[in-house]
Length: 594
Image 1: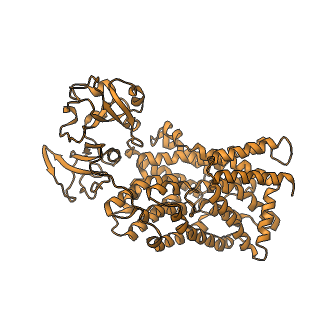
Image 2: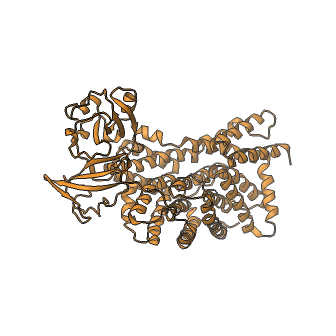
Image 3: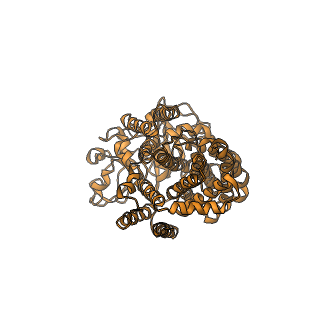
């Protein structure tokens, strides 16, 4: 074994240790290792040149991942995914029914949209289910994440790992994969995995109870919303519109043609022009803003200079020096002076039963304002307000562009699936159309590109090249072959799968793919076999670890929401890892003979 290979393996070991101990973030660790290897190129020609080490940042797969972040933003900002999923989810009455209705559409959607935004969009839906149906959140959040990961293994664009390996496969072996090539293994694995979770979750998953929002929350507002005439909820009942048992809020009454309807039953039919009076915490007001067919009851929202899609919700406390004190909102000409509109006013525990324009403001009143984000910067140190802060994730959705976003996504999938366009070409066109048709702005598109993931993947490709050039990959490959000697080709595949899975559990999916791919390539060369089955095994193992909550972003997203312990993932996830591995090892050689 040459010293370069030993050195490369030593650097990988140090990097892995740092990641396991949480000393650095993955992108920092990978970039640091890349810098070490680049420096070592000054002392040995076996280390890649700087041009080779940074070539990964120009990889076609990596570029496609970056562009797909924009496509996902367009889908998120229009509420397109909610439009598709709400009819599918329905109102389950049992835990098994809820899990089935949740996992099936999540897995399906995750095959076409990166699974991380899918979980982000479904997290509040699951929380809502738990509150409305008295379901235990611990029984639903892990199934949510697992379904998203399993669905991501069914297509080329389901996970960033698949796209990343696709780019490398295209560059190193000049082989391309179809949109659903990996689905030959991924779909059976997803079906087996979902069935396993449905069977064991009742016994193995914890209740994971999370604290409920209390009715007397200190940040409770009374807010009026208007039913838009001709909208999707015009003519539907309160139950059908999804406005019953809202998390963190409740519908207090309806005002219709000057008449107040109190204690409204769930069968009450809504009409265009109805004013709905809700009482709820600030997060629930944010959620109301995103419901299709509801708009703030004050017509002032349409008179502010900025488009609603560029605004956020902001909380501001009126100071005793404010010129607004002692005046009604209308007399203080709030919209004209501040280029913003008040949605609701909170005054201690008092419930203010007046229209917004007629409320006389007092020092200490908390205003819930809709305005451009620059309002916060302008008035952070203003004498008019004691405190100003934006409410996270409170931009109104572009509901009128939802069908456009869905059409763009379907067109992209069709173009790639038919072979008409390559993945990068199709995703670039889709991202451009998302911006041109107003599904998202260029600012939102840039803000939602996850640069940490892209940096980590670009650096990981350079590390993978170092493993190949220094002979480190061959050393590991020889170890795999020695350990699986006598077990046949499937034994070799199983050994590689376990190595990639261990890398995934220790350093995450990007690093696992980068380290395992050159090893698979080296094994294929030494054995003289077609590498495709080994590559598919690496794809599955690097994408699908269920036992470590820090190995994948979707697991981290549900970790706290479900009130889990680390051991919960280990207890349910280890058997699932073995199930997916077994399906892969059995099926991959059938489609790509070893």
